[in-house]
Length: 247
Image (cartoon, rainbow, N blue to C red; front, side):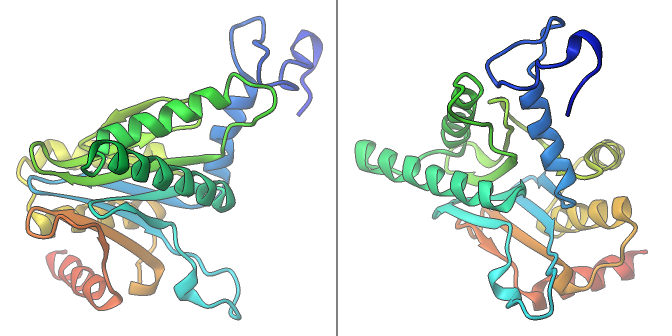
């Protein structure tokens, strides 16, 4: 990606700022997330948190059960990874390792916010060293905390992380955010069904697709079932039917 004039060359190294104070390689990592062509949505309800993402099986010969963007990190924490899937697997492995180390050191499972912070700190280090490159993935974490209830966090390649009521990542993420903002202004209370259906309808309306159960993946944690789990196609079908009946 060459730039004309005096901008040329500043995107060659991760460690070099451009004269206007930008790190182009980090910006390109964000571009890689959008260009992966997958959109993900995370929503936090009153007593649950939900992540929904597209499931694209590019080839008829692939086994669809092995294609996933949802990963369990600890019994109560899971995530959806948006962007380059190989980078995603690497980051998931590291996150699991950090979670296991916390469990070994302190004797209890790592809280969602601390895991998000640790992943973000690692990402930030990747923006300082020439020997590494930022990973082209965005991690949306959900978990259920005994004290704080449902948790939703997002980490990006720049090393920034923050908690959300609802968030999105990937292609068309800005349109999805606008949709969520409008919906959350109206709906103050969100039970489990409403939360799942808000996440699915956001994805559906932004991408203008009527989903079949095999087209999406849904990960959930709730007060009743604090363990992270993915919904089966039959459960997704129930939610899709309810959405159609509402309309």
